[in-house]
Image (cartoon, rainbow, N blue to C red; front, side, top):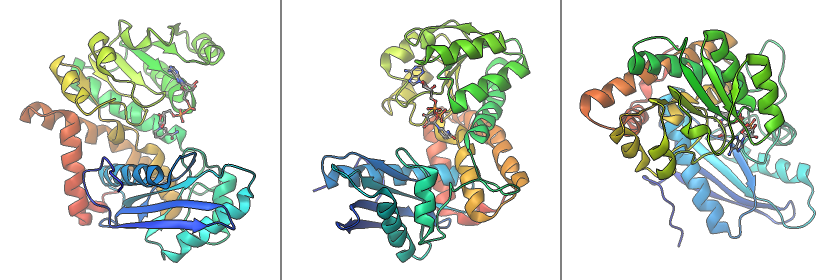
Length: 350
Ligand code: NAD
């Protein structure tokens, strides 16, 4: 029996099994209440099919919350393919996956995720049009989602800083953990805004080059979370906020790009107990999925910008409701997303 740590039962789980193509995995359609279930394809090593299914169920549910929160006309889904142990024909595998996506007639839309590439999306696209994250075409939405993710986090941080500190980010100190595709761009936006920066990355050369460019300070990866600052921006891996990290935070606000920042759900309460404002991760980092969705929905860059800029006021609204109702921001974000999953007619806001 599979036990997935999900809050709700998905609409549909589809087993993918094509030994000739090396295809072994699942597509999970969590919700189509707002539109086609959208979420990337993870290509990863799983010991057993049950582990792949549990991961797909958890990730699909997360996409329903993220897509609903961003008010996209999309539901949530995810696919997980087990990486074959021996040699395999990658193109044939993803073409076979494309056939499986096509059989669902548009109820599931796939894209890149951990372990998959643009080339994989092109292979999928030979058999279905229900795929995004393909090669960028000039004049169309799509391409690298990271700049949009960074802009959304920046807008959320500005809105949250107004609530927490009563002013702009100019002159505040922001500690950025991880200066990769998103964290690096976020740091540049913050520097333009007049924030003081402290940067850390396990790639020390990357962090130091950016610090030179922006006149920022450097911290080690072990100390960045506890550095004296106003805002802590987790932009590396998930689980950055565990009990020890939360206890050591000196920031008054946490707002960053990383997925699944809370190591356990209880960390939301731990942050609130220390009066640290937490901007919920899936609300603030939705810029990437907004851009990927635009590619599929045929939206323009202006529409993408409108949806991404809306992340700021949405974040502020959630933080204000949490304060007024004595709830954690995570609880309010989930409640608001669940309401949008039940009321798909609110999808058209841009
Ligand atoms: P990336 O791989 O480009 O950058 C991550 C950076 O973090 C790298 O420079 C890496 O060296 C560094 N890093 C890893 N472990 C670290 C540690 N312990 N301490 C400090 N630095 C560390 O990834 P990205 O695309 O910038 O994504 C960053 C986070 O944002 C991820 O959690 C990702 O899931 C999430 N996210 C990204 C997007 C997007 O559009 N790229 C969208 C939504 C969410």
